[in-house]
Image 1 (cartoon, rainbow, N blue to C red):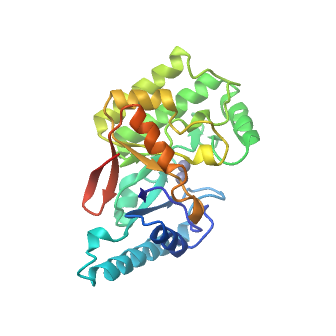
Image 2 (tube, rainbow, N blue to C red):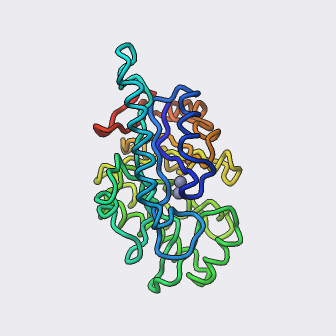
Length: 290
Ligand SMILES: [Zn+2]
Ligand SMILES: [Zn+2]
């Protein structure tokens, strides 16, 4: 068992990183990747504060070293059989506003990166559409204020931002690919319309070309904000057809969420043709049979 998408109290998660390590050990995890939200240069409640970024890195690296020492000192329990801790960030990509992924790669020894779009910009960078979070009213207000309620324009900007992120930043993992639909619920646009599926297809082609991994994010379901994974089943089938590699992640914000819905998700992915998942290690990507 492994999870590469985890938030602690350094961003919008609940606990110190140590609490997640204890839970991962209890559940017999092989790998636990920490991926708190990268800092963003404006007031917010979800990202690592700029002045805490270095401490975040040091804290995770300490845990990584401790886990390695524990397992490394026991010849019957070699490193590769123990819990591997990885340091990552879920990096927000807002062109012209956020740091490049390479800047973060230089600042911290990241084992991999997750690239996500939570804020969609239009031509005016002071106006951002926040598409995530616990409140649907924020999504509605943003669509109105930033894109004049023109959903096609806003959704197109979202997928273009993801396409630019994948092509220019080359994240290891693309986070919750179609999160833009979380609060849509058939109110503003149809996910079956040709313009929408066209945007998804273009995005998948770029992901395929770049070699990024797509995460199958279970959080929307266990938080009861979506009936399906991010991305949903129609997109997952396309991902399978294109042979794009996937990983399962819980996007945990609390220790007990670390492996939520993993058994059913593995069974579902197997049923639509997937046969392996990607895990990361200090040495790079590895394929785990489903
Ligand atoms: Zn996210
Ligand atoms: Zn996340």
